[in-house]
Figure 1 (tube, rainbow, N blue to C red):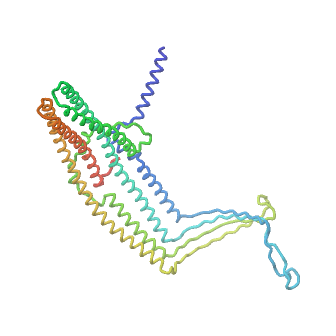
Figure 2: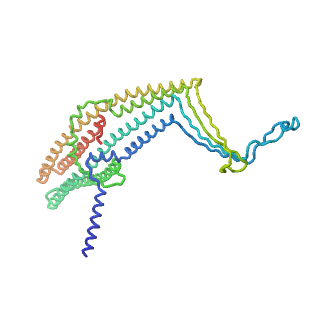
Figure 3: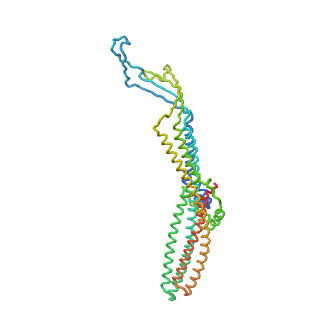
Length: 448
């Protein structure tokens, strides 16, 4: 019996441990760190960097020695017949003799080494490969900043849903109690039916709002899973609260923080676009330069009427060739000139776009600072308004049950309270979200 009890205990203990392993407890900062490693877009960005590294090496190898081997086997099903003057063999002048040259089977094997000596396009390609790698790394940095903001918003939305559910459930409890008491008063003939019906309407709306918020909470968790890259769909337990996050995200120094546009990822990416177009101009110009390459090969061949190429007495004849190739562009009917002009226009456009990006980023930063400051001000106002609405609603309840005020007055006070509760919760989310937006606008890096 003891062994049975012990086995059952161990079974449930293992089950409990496995259940715990499927849960992830996260602060908002831990959620951001998790997403940087597991978010789908971040994984793709990391893979793109690896691909860019490989592309850089692929481009480099174009200028390195290339060795290729080749083996040809030929079998003549019916050999070609050639005609030569018969007088060569002692025949009559004007006649031709039919002869067959070569053997029915032959094998040729060769190894060739090719080396590019000079090509302007290759030099530009090397620079382009480095720029492409830099662009891939910057794209990952941009993705990480976007991921941070997305996770903060998703995390905050879940907390808002949970906070709203708690508030609505408490409101429902209080309102249900008020309705129950009012119904008893009505049954005793001390109040009108209208007062009961007014509370029933308010309670019905409250219950609908509660059900909808519960559904939104489920959707919020699904959005958080996507933002995190939670492939295993592990249960996530959020350990931060809205109040704590508002405190952590209240940083007035950000409003006065200087903005260095040269370090902003969007500006650097726009600048890279300009560099790419500069390389395209160089590429088109380089096509007017000559290219020089060299090769050397070594090969052997054998001939036979039957397949005797693996026999020890088979004769093999070797050969070797060294060559240099110089390609000089002379005249392209002005096609190169046209392509170069197009590349220069693209470069000029990218320089114009760079100035536009600079102005937009400055405006974006100022707007983000303003919106963050406004969110802090709205939060303080919402907190004060909530306290006032709670006091008004309590007074109206007292007046209602004392028969001094109507159910309509109480309903107005309750709806005003519910609105201020919603505004208060939303103001906390706005502080968190606007702080994240400002950090992205200022290009504050993520400390991995």
